[in-house]
Image 1 (cartoon, rainbow, N blue to C red):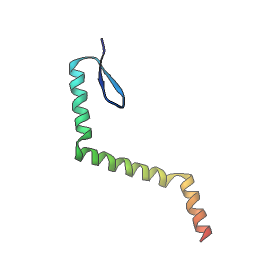
Image 2 (cartoon, rainbow, N blue to C red):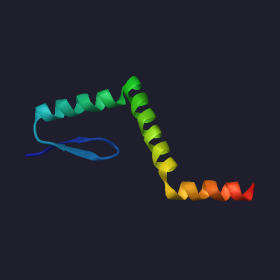
Image 3 (cartoon, one colour):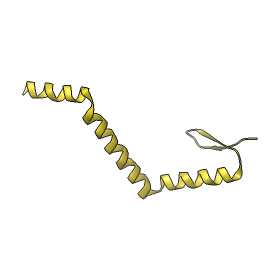
Image 4 (tube, one colour):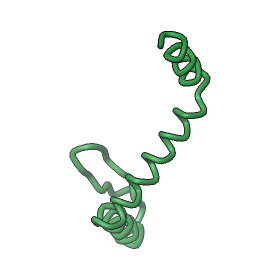
Length: 68
């Protein structure tokens, strides 16, 4: 039988008490301030790299150069 660890965002299925504890520890680690800040920074850097390498971004930069 499945138990569910619920939040207001989603329901996460867990199969036993050990999984529940492991999942709760993972959530606590990820949501702790230093760890969350590190994850946000990495996501922002990844987003910036994706945008920078985007052909649309390059086209917009070229367009801006031609307009000046």
